[in-house]
Length: 309
Image (cartoon, rainbow, N blue to C red; front, side, top):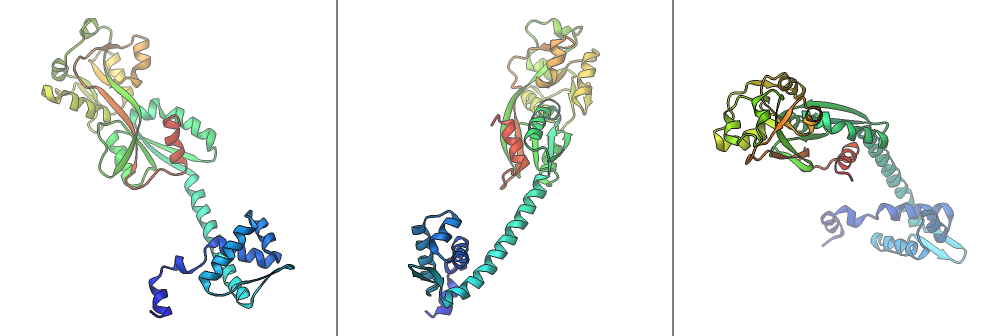
């Protein structure tokens, strides 16, 4: 096999010295000794000598003349040094461009989150993130879980948080917290006086104040009551947690919401929790991002904060 044919079949990375070796050769040219070049680059002299020998073997020419007075470049070494300088300058330009890209990425963070997470968990996480990344501008879109998933899939958000039972195709996820749904009524509602609460069948056939379809809350409730004939026609179907709570507090009827969302109302007895035996109302809260990627920069740091590091 001729040299040209061999070169065409061997990858460039196996034929060209690595960047560290080229930087070493340039340092030898600047300081005039192998030991001085080694000190400048923070490596031992034996390591520097080994790296020069390996480069000479790979290129098939002698690059450095070694003597008690120091190290000088051979004619071939001087020529290779000129080429090496261009390669290192190109690498420095590449590195500067990569840093600029990282800086642009790290200057902003777009978050999409389902209502419950946006209202009751994200504020604390974002305050902590601000302490770590004060120069990162954060934008938050709050919507239902289906809307959040779509925003992440279309790259309109760098990181999403959802509440549903499953993760949509095209997204990877990590569980960040556990939650459960609670049936709650005003203290004047007949269910408030029931010591044993309601069973799933009665809950299924009762008109309820609910979040809209597509919300994680609605998905979990639909699945939990599917075996009992599914949900009855909602009494009210509202697009925000605050509206659902306000309707229930007014005495309009029972609501079903996240335990996180009902802490204040239950503590103040504006609403009363109604036990439901035998219904699977627990759920996982998840962070989501596009399949095949990993959160980076501010998104990675926010994800770390949600998991308590």
